[in-house]
Image (cartoon, rainbow, N blue to C red; front, top):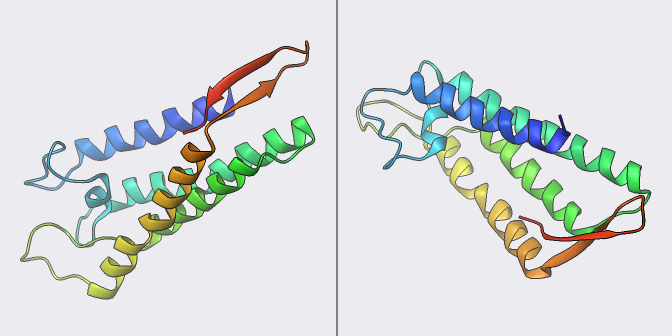
Length: 146
């Protein structure tokens, strides 16, 4: 299995597992994935493992790709910013959406600020647009990096 595909399946699997243990009142169409790792939720470690694991493994995938192709693709550097934001999002948890649960406002604020570099780096990657992946046989595949 390709590393990036494994990474995507890992993160989706963690999200689905965390859904099973979601706190009462959590509705996947109305609440965020971050709320599965919210302060006060007994099973928050599941989604934290997803955020932290994804944030640690994503750079590994791109470093391996850079090593294999022997050149740096600058949009990948923005993906590294994204991975750092995701990793730290797993460390600092948002407030639980239920108002009766005590939480750290400072931790929730840090969590809410962290997606900004993630969004900016994804926007920049999308703005850069398409690029080609050169294969060993000399042909190229054009794709949009998300």
